Image (tube, one colour):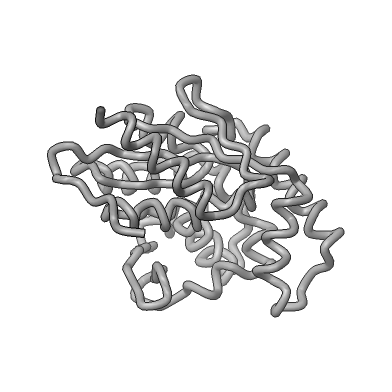
Length: 230
């Protein structure tokens, strides 16, 4: 389908929030491509930070040490031939941050207020010029509360586990049943954390993608953008 690119003056910012495995990153990337917008994967930024601290054997409970070395952490999101490339201090960690170890710990590191403040500041800077599609868990409520379009994307736990299992099957690291439990636990941690918990912004549009294809979801969001421009 042809690109829906617009002139810079009518660009908007799009915030897509939702629980783990809802398809936020894939959809956000596709929407950004259709609109010729910039895609910012905030989840990848938290995963990159988690990977960085795990590599240094610094647990999420060691907040003092995390804050001590946080200024040394440099995260870059770069366009690549196979999609977005994630770099930490110059090294490509795109594949590393999708490991089971990172999956299991990222929500715990994401609860650290100082770390969130650092990454939120970077994310807001990326959105200043408009024309950004940003996905995560607190974009519409905390990072970009003034985004012109906010989507809260969800799906059943079973469907989200099925999608994630399909992605991870080659790694042969976890059973489907264990993945269902892992995603449910991550939902709990994200919803109960004290700093920027996962919740739907009051002005966000709820979009349940359980029975929708990727193209159907993207088309629906593009239509919402077009309606905003009228």
